[in-house]
Length: 178
Ligand SMILES: CC(C)(COP(=O)(O)OP(=O)(O)OC[C@H]1O[C@@H](n2cnc3c(N)ncnc32)[C@H](O)[C@@H]1OP(=O)(O)O)[C@@H](O)C(=O)NCCC(=O)NCCS
Image 1 (cartoon, rainbow, N blue to C red):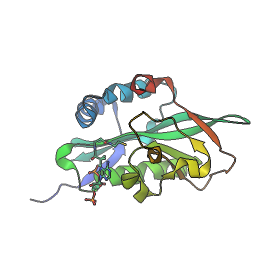
Image 2: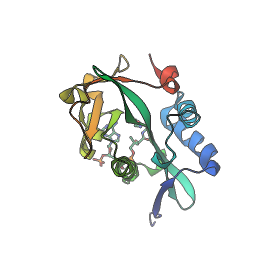
Image 3: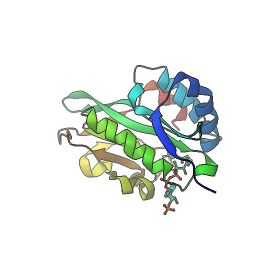
Image 4: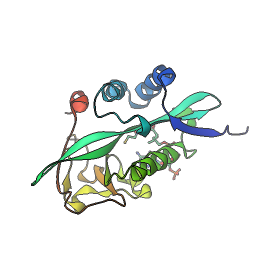
């Protein structure tokens, strides 16, 4: 069977229900679909960095990069964070997750963002250029079950080494913290 062509494009209002179903299934029982909607309804949402992957007219993947804050010794600095990333179970291991991560990080680069923060498995994110955030002086509070290496950062062309401090999660993430 031929694999349908994958189109990566910004999410649209008509995709909201499909994204909810996709994200809820990918992270069940965690309420990550609620997180997507809370980010979308917040000032931290960046429409051009909320992407879907579509195959034959169906949404099979979704990723968001949205705003967060880095608390440094010299004050708060705006940064961006990749969360969440989801691919439909039947469409995994076809490179869709990777294509979404690369596409959304390329938009962050074009926008002049200095770095992208992520909380996730370094065995996955390392291939895209994410590194342990503490190597660059960035602290990310992780859930108890996550290993310290889950705190990662991708430095972009506009990276500035004075970006040292602790990531403050926006209120949309409050329900996921434990
Ligand atoms: C993680 C996820 C987005 C990957 O999507 P995908 O489209 O299958 O990703 P790709 O095809 O680009 O890459 C697949 C590769 O990543 C590996 N991989 C997937 N999840 C991984 C993980 N958590 N840790 C390490 N490797 C992982 C696969 O084994 C596969 O490896 P291979 O290329 O050597 O076979 C998808 O599995 C998913 O939606 N999972 C549930 C939600 C989730 O965990 N999201 C990430 C939260 S940080």
